[in-house]
Length: 362
Image (tube, rainbow, N blue to C red; front, side):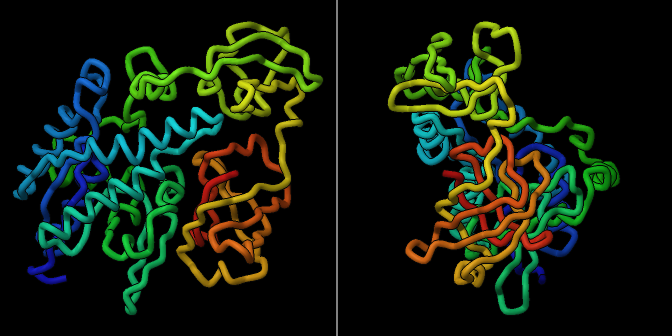
């Protein structure tokens, strides 16, 4: 890098993005700090959401002042609402469980913000994600797991395109969280001890994410019955959006023993419950909308990979059979059946620590 290299640093107000900006600056890069404003405070529930950009924006501005770089607040509310929140509600409304962070990374953090960076004359975007982007000499990239296994965020980046990743830098991916905080202290950053964000970007006070979205889009709940496997009606519920596969609480009544959600029928509004947890396990799944970051794998008849079907899960061994009729689809067959395979969640394929690609379950 030389002194003409310019980067937009995505500044969330947290310690990871702050250290990422500082590390890019130390390499001689010209850095511009930008904080995305995801919601107006009136939309975010009496201003309680961090995504209306107030407290986090101030924290980011303080860091930028300390580093001696400019700071801007960029309004991303329209694209966030349309591409992330509305899509998420559409998924909940048909009995699926969305992963808004994966969608946000693709369309907002490394879509909208990257477009803004290019307009600013920057070469790309730096972020505080705990993942490693390996820039190769031929201009291509590999996406790898971050060095801190407890903080690795490669799962959430699986839908970001190769073309986008080529213009992205994630310097803290090489560090543990402890090392990030130590670096922030060394730099004298005011947010060095700031608590972790919980990724609950938008929620009205007292409401869960799905109910928040239903309210936001003024939608009607799809109510229905709790149904046993034998078809017996066990009770009623106020909306399928309140449930996800494998859930064992929130039914509004006790059943005398543990009970789990096995299936959600969006057409009838039925939520199928089982008492035997073993009935939640599945041997395979269908993946759609696959973003192949290692495109050569899409042409294989089949291959072995490590597969992750939720963020807080250890990747497991599976056989992948890419579709011959649709290059963005594949069948995933687990060596060991997996619990609560959930429609709408991301499924990410790995070769050791390298992301092969990521798609959507179901």
